[in-house]
Image 1 (tube, rainbow, N blue to C red):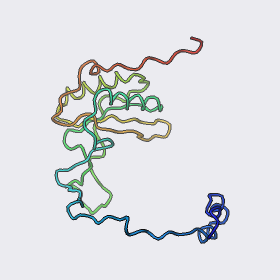
Image 2 (spheres, one colour):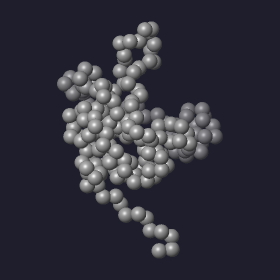
Image 3 (tube, rainbow, N blue to C red):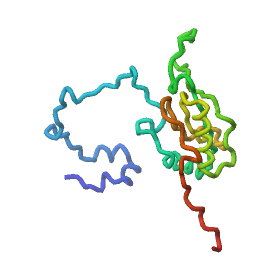
Image 4 (tube, rainbow, N blue to C red):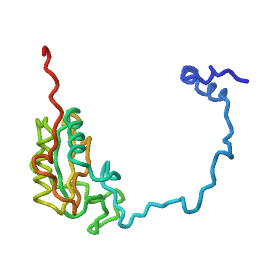
Length: 186
């Protein structure tokens, strides 16, 4: 029998090849692997089964859930921004591509609703703008993104409205933000 200390992270980092060779290898037990039922195997159907952005596998987010995401965005130092797309809410291969460009896809860039919300610290402001956007464009896809101006990248993006959904509630949908943190010295 081999010593279990041979397979410790310290041993692996000092002499990787010798440590790997010394580690006992267990054969996979075929008894533990269940037979796969033919109907249990599923294939993703790409026709009429589009997935949109992060969190799209969840049911539509409530105003309170959207507000929590916006609070995370603001707490991370990112600038909230609202974008919308009236035709398609997903990345697609356009018909107007003249040459075979394997990495060229359309639908990556959406129309910005107003300007990014620089200095925004209240989720209610973002929800109010989402409500205004969905009222103006009820048949559009609307998403909230979080932009990191230091790294110049988009760090957060999720859909808040799809065509057919009712516009978001007025006055931020009844969302009540958490109380402000206590001030130092209080």
